[in-house]
Length: 86
Image 1: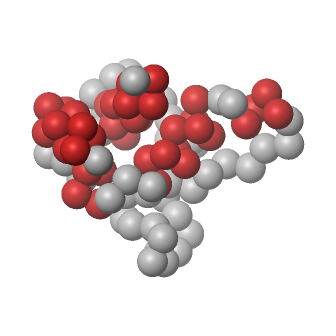
Image 2: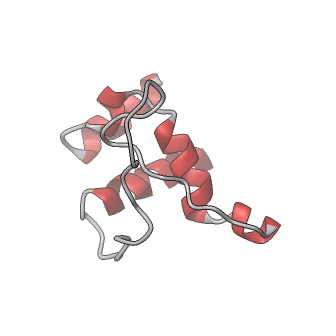
């Protein structure tokens, strides 16, 4: 339940549906590989265990593991629907 709520909030942030400035947090990958897609983000580095549990670190890792059709959903409702099937 918490994971789905975090992913939903990241979808809203990435698509500008909430007023959170995350330009320096949601950075596209330097290069695409078989493990990343055009809608994935770089996972920021961290040195402390407290930062490892932060919203962006936990959620970007989960986001990058989602299939491309889920991350490219056209609306919030379709994202939530596709998230339930994943």
